Length: 113
Length: 113
Image 1 (tube, each protein chain N blue to C red):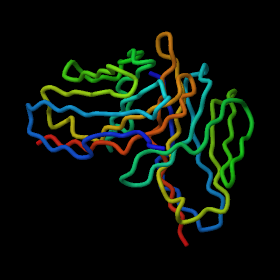
Image 2 (cartoon, rainbow over the protein chains, first blue to last red):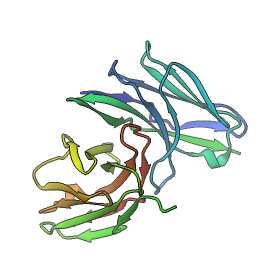
Image 3 (tube, each protein chain N blue to C red):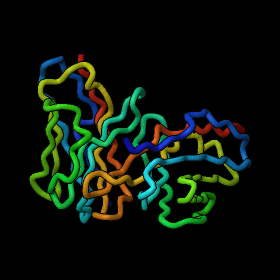
């Protein structure tokens, strides 16, 4: 069973701080990694994708990937109350002759004013 | 541009009844995914299609569930007969084949009494 693990939280940070969200995965062959944001009662929304080791920055978001450690993280700089949501990590894991997306259970982030 | 369209948005039905959920992917996307989300199990992949062909249906819980994609712009997920444990939010997502950067529809909230 290929797994994607996240701390369920909630992670509580003050406005303006850096929020750090972490995800580990079990399939060493995984090649594609994604972060989705899901507001309560809404559908997941893609915010970052990363495919190679290192950092990828997009505005206030930075995704970090370390394939050797099977670890992917998301940093949110200058956190805002509007960032309060559940963040889902998704990893493509091998299944038969193809890859399927496997989601973690998500980390709840609360940014308080 | 229109995003992924799902219907109905809400469905309440009695145990034993047939339920059909519908999805229209984003034009030009040739991969389509069906998910189920519950508090207990998180976001689970049920089945996904590439170019209208089912690629992986290992997540379909049992024979009561079936999915079809008769053309590039339409897919259905059918549950027959429905049971109370099928109550969940069902999401459809689409992507360009091979990218796995998924765009989710608004979901269908299914309640089986």
